[in-house]
Image (cartoon, rainbow, N blue to C red; front, side, top):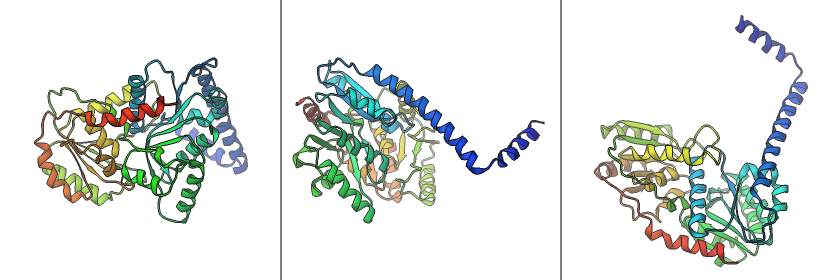
Amino acid sequence: MEQFAAKIFRVAKSLIPPVIRQKIHSKRISKKAEIIRRIYKKRTHTLFDISATQMRIVLLMSPEHGNLGDHAIAKAEMRFFRDYMPGIQVVEISYGHYLYDRSEIRKHITKKDVLVTNGGGYLGTLWFHNEEMVRDIIESFPNNKIIILPQTIYFEDGDDAKEQLATTKAIYSNHKRLIFCAREKLSYNLIKSNCLLANADNCYLTPDIVTYLCESKDTVFRSGLLLCFREDKECVLSDEQKAKIIAYAKISEETIYYTSTVLNMPVSISDRDFALESKFAEFRKVKLVITDRLHGMLFAAITGTPCIAINNKSGKVKGCYELIQHLNYIKVIDNPDEIMEQLAKLLRLVDCEYDNSNLLHYFDTLAGLIKEI
């Protein structure tokens, strides 16, 4: 009976003219957007102290989606602010929050505030909606110091990408107080060679800020291999190559586990720590990780887990590896066929411990840039 009723409903629905269905759909979307807007507006008033007279740090574009790499970046940033700038108020504004309530947010930000954008690998043409939001922030706050936290910027080939590069240059270089922290040399060189900043000295090479975290813990027992592959537009591995990697992994006779650093659900700011700790625990339990995700490699690094990382489309995996290549338990390769050469070596490693002491001078410099008014 229920199946019959459902069929009748589908038939009845199909008889509604498309124009009317579209109006109903649009009305529902509009109502949902208004509810979201009200929630964010309330959050704006909760986060900002309108009477503030001291400098604040406003972190913009932090995630509420399911990409745990981006959440790890935000977690590391907030820990960095806590360690280096105790007593300074930090206001965190997510991507969605800024998108829905930017007019109200702009009213609360003063000229004394330092604006920082969440780090990552989203600038340029690969994830263009993020590039557009950064442009909007830069143009909306011409008098504020703005720091783009450790970031990859990448423009694909083609005339459209060249036009977007020119637009990016026009906007970035027009802001006199914009500072760009590039997390690898490819991005650093792109900024320098294209003169994207008003002051060329305002570009700094800074490691992905996830390297500021230390999540290695004593593990009683490790077993198995963990495979973590991309499924989005940055993936360079074919199904055939993935099958070959799995075949290589099986030669080790270890149990094969699969994971992703992206969850199929949103993760709120309040749930961030729980979601990340659950993921870090997965990495701590295995002997070896094989991944083509940058943050698959970095999660392995900070949890003291041996890892073979395969370079990706924008080159950011290999680029970021250059700043952590002192870790003997992390190796980057360009071709899956190189896996066998590294597999046996890395499986023999035990009791690996993450050490970021040689990176701290980069973070000292970053703290100085934020504090310097």
